[in-house]
Image (tube, rainbow, N blue to C red; front, side, top):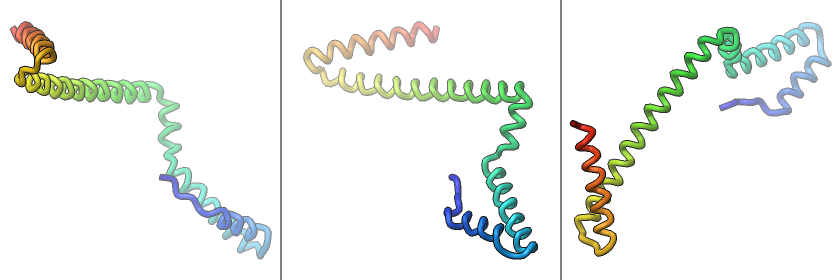
Amino acid sequence: MIHRKPANATKKNEEQLLDGTLEEKMGAVYKLTLHWSQELEKSRIMEYTQLMVRPWKLIWLNLLSGASRGVGIAIGFTFFAATIIYFLQALGALNLPIVGDYIADIVRIVQRQLELNTR
């Protein structure tokens, strides 16, 4: 989340730069510079530039994040498919006329496939 000061706070700093003694102007410049440096720290620009200088680190991070997403998708799909098969078995047990036979065929096919893969 980006925290920004209101526009009138920036105008106030600009007015302080134009009016006042040298010490007040230097204080206003210091505050403005401090504000800019804090904003740059929040944006993590240094880490971004280090990644641009080290392309192999960037490649490694992207490879790692892609593998993590792939594993997450595989786990999620497995859970989703298992849930659907569970509900199909429950519907097949209800012995609905046309739908029940179709669901029973799907469940048998999946069970055969699972048996073939475990041997």
